[in-house]
Amino acid sequence: YVLTPKIPSFYREKHYDAVFFGTSQSYCSFDPLIFDEYDLKTYNRGRQQQTMNYTYYYIKDALDVCDIDVVVLEVFGMFYEEDDTGFISEGVRDSSLNDMRMSETKIEAIRECVPEEMQISYFFPLDKYHFRWEELDYASWNGFYNSALKPYYEEADRGYKRWTESEVCVDDYWSIAFSEIRRDVYAGNIKYLDKIYELCQKKGAKLIPFQHHFHSDEFRHPDCLYKNSVQEHPVISYN
Figure 1 (cartoon, rainbow, N blue to C red):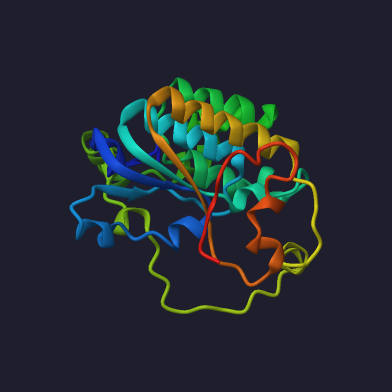
Figure 2 (tube, one colour):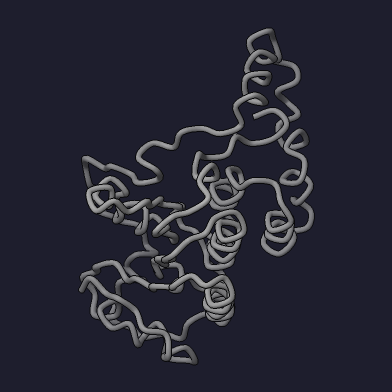
């Protein structure tokens, strides 16, 4: 990573039968290998803790470069509160922006989602990784040369994560998220959900909102997600 990020092989294809978007609940749920058995070309573009603003730009970017028949949107991002750390986390920013191709959509995403004082590092990665100049050697320049010749990388399992072990989550956030308390959805999330619907309609892609299986009643009822203004959007639930 010297001048520009390497981007996944997702961008090489011009058509997908379905692409999956959302949080880690997406990349842990949909395995493209299974869909291969039905001769369906798929890819998983889910990212860790991805908030709805980044998800919107991920979908917009994908529809700019690919003809996608079905957009599957995993909706856990709708539960993030306005002050959730996901909106300001460097890890979320990096995982959502570093492997997005440079384009007008990425520029718009940086301007809309990244604090102004940090934007320069995402427009020009040289600024973010300036400390590497003192460590450059022949291998570094050779790596940059090969990167320029081969800008794509093969993402393992087309974005799907094969976890072999699970752990009990003890984070305080989850004790709130999985409580029985019904709460209003952050208006910013609704805004971007509506923008995603409008975008898919404009591009001729079928949008399927999807809710992963959860053990809490709050998550078993999709209406709690759309209690304010978007009840017209049906959600497929595993519950």
